[in-house]
Length: 388
Image (cartoon, rainbow, N blue to C red; front, top):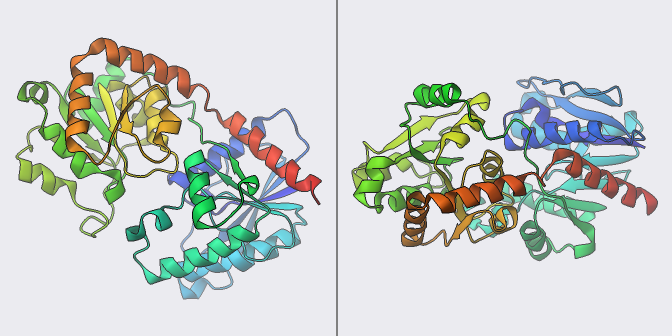
């Protein structure tokens, strides 16, 4: 079977979608079954650059398509690719099935189509559909998802939301969770841990948040919860807010530094900015607690990464996060600053509880592997092919 894959995000390898695509391809290549051939269909936009998929076998072929609308700008370019360009490329490559690993499948396709819908944040949280173009675009891809032969999503939470919002039946939606890369493991090398702390100006003992800064990530409430800790704990543990600033000042991206200034926590909270990929595992490993009380996640990759690094996790009782964590994390109401603060204090004061959560987290993270994700994905391909 010749499977076409929308490989647009090979051009954005550090994004969440880019990482998901790269790891999925590596997982597919690792399977013992070698019946499938994969055409990695990618556009050539005016400002795009191509990142070659790493060390894949000859069953994977990269096919680049020059955009016909390069002069009209990135948004038009991308829609043309998703709705027209990829169909033309797939017809030329004589594919048997098309998989779009992000929410982008064409409204019309001459072959069976699988689309991965990671989450439906734009519909669950209306404030995320703030631009008219976004509403139009997501209306179009919603129609396309209803016409897909199968939808893959990453959690039971996302499945329920897709059923409710897009109106798909349960039998058309396949839950295949994400996985953790082998580069995330408990780092015990004292020199390496110290090196990472020095690079980002971090104290020896700290609580870590790592992620984005949009409002659902709940960063201001994290800072407020830290500010309510007993002074003795704040003296002992620094709060580290790690991640790249984007769109700060927009209503959807409140600047967390203003919360720090308002609470007078400048000496206790540090913002690292963007973290290098090779520093992520040491950063997680060095943290005493990783806190991620997000208001909504389709999956929650950073929680899984922290568990894989042996770091105790504090996260939310809502959305997909309880599915990912299971009994391996401390769950709190993310809307309650007092609950977040009290649970954090309890973890910081109880070494035995932290050790137990770390042990459970490591064990749970081992069940999320990319070969497993790839195997389940191929089963979806075959199920659709049998129905033809």
